[in-house]
Image 1 (cartoon, rainbow, N blue to C red):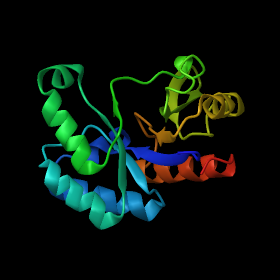
Image 2: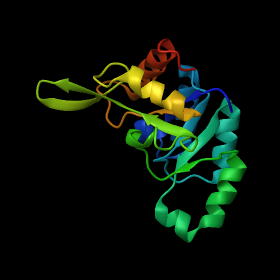
Image 3: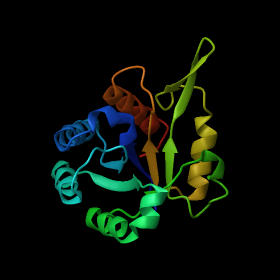
Length: 177
């Protein structure tokens, strides 16, 4: 794929993905925010086929998942089958911006998080609202050939859906589509 794309990391919305019904409502809201793709992680128990029906129904793509090392080791065929069912090419075990340039041509997925200070306390922030050097980070991503930019915010200072929306708007304003 020659163009980059944006996706929402569902870990940001983990409090809203505990049941299949929660997951369906969350996927609907994520789509309404303007996202076309998600990285699935921190989902409650759900049948892989039901998850596919939900994302297909909302017009969302599962671009990546967080899959534990143990599950990849112990159930590799199940992981492969699920990812094929979803049309998902990426199962991420970790994410570190330090490796972006070192992994040129091999880092198709990056997680984007921002940090801010409130007094002497470090907090997660919406992408573009904190103190990270986004021009340098995004340049490194472009040089490395990143395919998916996955927005994640571990802890939100406001409604998590609002936080994902702010991050999406900020990244689009920075030229990431």
